[in-house]
Length: 360
Image (cartoon, rainbow, N blue to C red; front, side):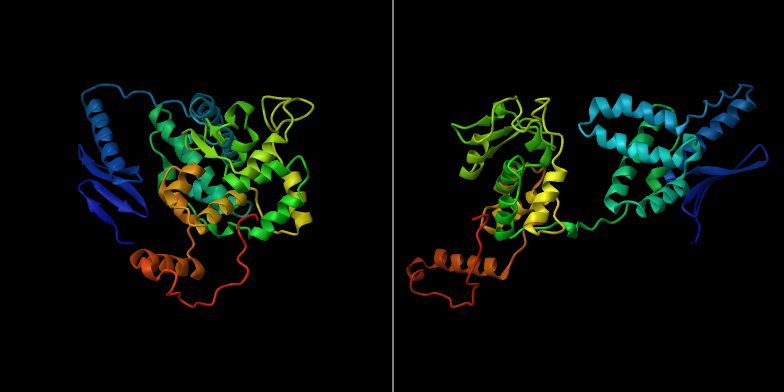
């Protein structure tokens, strides 16, 4: 790659270097990973050299900070007080510590982070690696902000491209089969997930006080997007909830401790096995609910509000036009434009004989 040049700065192999002369001596050293970082470094070094010329002593360099120690500090002072997902950070930091154990923040550069990426990719999915890289980037941002590091080396590292094709959308028959094969304790969870699109944690932390049976909605106080919302209940959801015992403030609770259920992975896996459904994740039930609502003609704004998405763009992932949906759209358009012909002029199009409706 041809080297870039700016007065007293040079770019080579992804890095910027300082290159200037002071009192007859040429000074060349690393300046940063961006031009702005290099410009700031250049100004700082020039001031230090001028201070030396004037007889001022240079300030002592700060003591090197171990990654392990700062990771604990970052978790305690930033993640836990400020993030609902701090447990995700805790897990990411555990994996990052395994790689960077014993290194100081200054010893970690883009090359070491790329090595981490390559190693982790052989162990986990690209999405998991990207979450860990995001955590590392935030950690270094705080290190710079708190005066523990001068640069954030993760800025020069790109995340992996994620493949979202893993999403599995159930057919109406599959959804019904899954519910029929679920154990009694987990069946209501699956019904709520399929009929509301609520997230796993929103369902498992649900309390009786958040269910309004008279007006027919579930109130979610603390969603992932940080905003509360009301989710309408269908008859299926009402029936599933009314059948639950009220022995705890939580709707889904551990009979022994009366605390909320922490997870249903084993029960869900068993239901999938009995229903002979492969490659399904619990979160796919949310995807299924979204896709089926859109397929039924519900507008994107309404679907987005029910799901609690932060933006309409997130909801648009579930809008998959099919030939049948497009034909219905133009048929409906014809009816609106020419109401007198809506019962007479019928377009003859081959259509599937058995269109399964959502969840029967």
